[in-house]
Image (cartoon, rainbow, N blue to C red):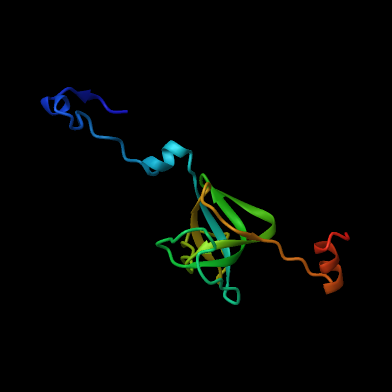
Length: 140
């Protein structure tokens, strides 16, 4: 990626010095190497569903793991409204939408996530208890 001039330091085992500065990147080196793409999730935080611990997802500087009802995802600058909202794990309380996020409703929040980040999706099924138990017991 860089034009590298040989230096005496390179011969001594230290890293060579680039002769041209790198172009500004919008992704980290790790994201570039792993194909990691940034997403923005738009939805409402579910405040009544607060797990204890990190659910095996690991700590995140954005805050503890919680869940949100996500109704839209932005990838590569383009928004996709989901056919059905998903209950997904998120870190922290999210950020208020930007003024140019015309898709956002006033009470919604925005979360940033990587496409390769581990997440938990909850599938909510409303049915009589007997029907839910029957499915779990292998009867349906």
